[in-house]
Amino acid sequence: MKKNRTFCAYCGSRLVVQDIEGKNRDYCGSCHSIFYENPLPVACAIVANKKREILLVKRAKDPYRDMWCLPIGFAETGEEVQNAALRELKEETGVDGSIVRLIDVDTVDNYFYGSLAIVTYEIRMTGGVVAPGDDASDAGFFPIKELPPLAWSSNEKALKIYVEIYRDNWSMIDSFTKLFPESHTLESIPAVNEQRRFLSDILIQVIDKHIDHISAKWNSDLIKGFPNLAPHLVILTDLHRNSLKGIQFWLKRGIDTLGVEEFIEAGLILKKKNIPLPDILSVMALSRKALWTYIMSQGILTSPLEVYTALEINNRIIFFYDKINYFLTKGYFS
Ligand SMILES: [Zn+2]
Image (cartoon, rainbow, N blue to C red; front, top):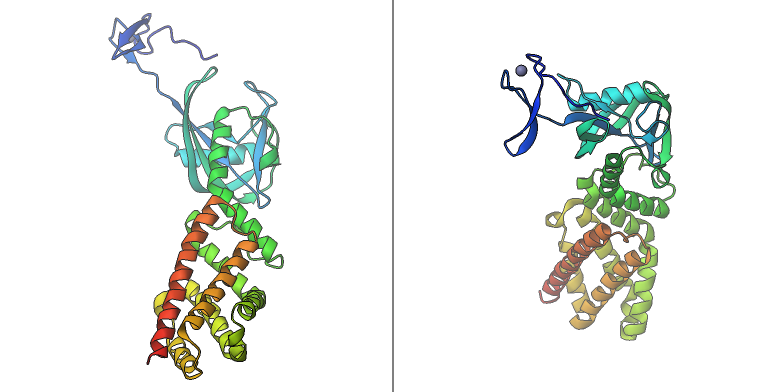
């Protein structure tokens, strides 16, 4: 365990323990030095590969010999903690890396080392070959769901935070690759602040690829609910498809750039064909319903963040259809 201090480092006198500022501290009665206990900074690295496996090292020395842990070691005086994490990573695993982000700072009282401040970074592997180095008897990647027991509880805590940060991204990527298995564009994980844009991209592609499915559903709903509109199916199908294309456009660029002229014109044409306005609005409601039902039926929006983001996007889709309805009506009465 951590050794106790017996003599003053400055004058060599025997120390006593005194209550100073509310804590028991080593105190030298001869030169009046107080010895404060400060946590030692420890730098730690989370490195994941593209298969979501985590790089671990097997400890060659006590304490915790033969147990696995994240690459970890003491920062030295004058050394940035970030650089200590990169250095320990290189020394213990042979891996070169660059800092992605701070994941966790944990202060612990360790039986062997005393008080520690463990600073864990996410690090992207940029080079090197995995091979055990200093203080490690083995090194390798482990599936994040099948990690061995780790030597440090702080490692477990930091990994839990790491998983929290990425879980939603991973589930989106899984949905995406399930929907578009041919896609090879998802080598890297999108940043957390890009999730919304990422989900928009998914929706744009769903419409792109499945517009016929969505339209078939809309078509059957229409025939069933409004048999009187059957003679106008061609023009109404155009309207429905143009609405979906408008949504894609809007998801890409924003509502302000939407071309509304075609909807005003469509309203005018529908009026000339004597189609009652309530029927037209019902056709649009069926269009919106077909789109949303299709998106939900794909099972791509399952995590809490996806559902939250999806609801937000659904609100905007509603807003968008309202906008189309407004311009249709405007054209209708023009
Ligand atoms: Zn002294």
